[in-house]
Length: 397
Image (cartoon, rainbow, N blue to C red; front, side, top):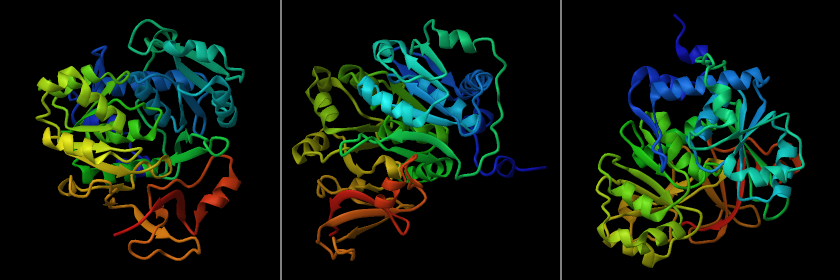
């Protein structure tokens, strides 16, 4: 008998695996719609989406764009794309139509699925995509739902190797044109292994309020929940009152959460905070920017330990994390490198910085991108002997 790893070139369909292991376990919950999918339901729906994409000609290496608010549909499309060996193109709905025109033109997706809530943005696009289809985003009637409803599901993943591309996420482009960060299946798997250092396992329940077009929203903690066989709760858009209700709901049992300082401020200041409970929460991560000490201390007194983390799209948001026991004493620190990420701090002269000396943070390891999409110039500037130059200044104590 051929084992599944050999059959699939070491890339395994996460949903298919978990559907066989724990078919009735809740995989996904969507708020506020209340939609739910067990692993076997998610596996089957992803299969129908894959069949539909295949009927449009999507195959290995083709890009499939998603422009949407947070939705279970996005994850259905992501996993269907992977099942075909195609590449998920994450599109930032906060960008203007001209900015999206550039990204779509650079990535050249074969299909684009968009949220009804973003129809005005789509109408303003000038770039051409062969197949464009609308979804309601919360399971309501739409062209997308009609297209997949009666299809026979594709339940097998095409054979893939870990270096196969699975995703394109574009940088913000604050210092020039956006760059498409290539993400491989191998990077995805190693990022989940790194996430095990944050108590990610089969009984985790992650609440996602960050956008799924961003590596933070997708990787911390949506993907780990689905990789390990836990539950991912997707909030369509951040609502502090609804989030506090979710934390307080023992039937949900939220264990993992990622936010940015503005989110933690909004949760703190909401009237429902007074009566909210966080009894099941065991990992709470803050990223994107430094968290003020006063905010960390306020939540610490409230019984919530905010661990600061550091990462970027180029390393799967899987670089550094401040230890649970280091809060609040070491607030302001990004902590230590995760298990399968190596870091060093380099001075302007190229030598490694001494303890306490500032320099540029470099990282390498299996979570680091192989490069940028169609940007050899950016690759030459960013990578040195296998090390990724992050462009961020740090020091080590």
